[in-house]
Image 1 (cartoon, rainbow, N blue to C red):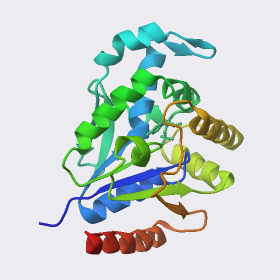
Image 2 (cartoon, rainbow, N blue to C red; image 1 turned 90 degrees about the vertical axis):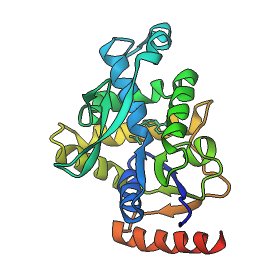
Image 3 (cartoon, rainbow, N blue to C red; image 1 turned 135 degrees about the vertical axis):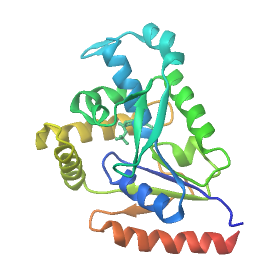
Image 4 (cartoon, rainbow, N blue to C red; image 1 turned 60 degrees about the vertical axis):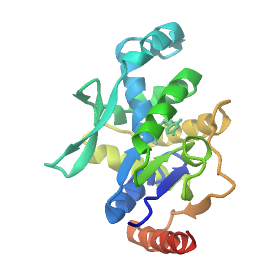
Length: 231
Ligand code: DC
């Protein structure tokens, strides 16, 4: 049987990591996990419980209930996609809202939240062919991943992509606000103390500012073939 690979895709917000990761998973018939959706789901839980607001953070409340937060990815045959569930509720659209985007950086800086998410991510990926996208997949979650890709694209292009994605999901959005949020999250992601966003030494850089998903797929297929030949 062909070796089941772990493919780690890290990079800046709204680079198209999930779109690319999903396309690779589909091509290889692998599991796709959007680790950002997990941090977003925890953030939504904390917002609903009023553990986080503008200027406030109830860290004890969060730590106390962290064990009660369950996140699943459940396949929806109607749209042929996995959707994010928070304690059995489908939150796939709600976690993409501007409100969640505004609070997620603070929640993802909490060490205990990161520990719990990393544990879950490793459990999900255990012994499976998997494509996981995020910020620390190649550096922390799966440092021995078979293929590591670090994605980047210009801020304007990323803002446009996030804006289009939100519009497509019927979420109200303002382009300048989306752009400001992306810049703020870049800074937060790169500068947090634990697991900051950085390229793993052995990750291959992909700047997809001017590439279509098909072009990215051609590029990655060659990499997958060459890694398989090596192993
Ligand atoms: O990929 P995304 O933009 O949906 O991720 C949402 C936030 O979650 C992002 O601002 C940083 C955080 N995140 C993280 O800290 N580590 C990950 N592995 C994935 C996301």
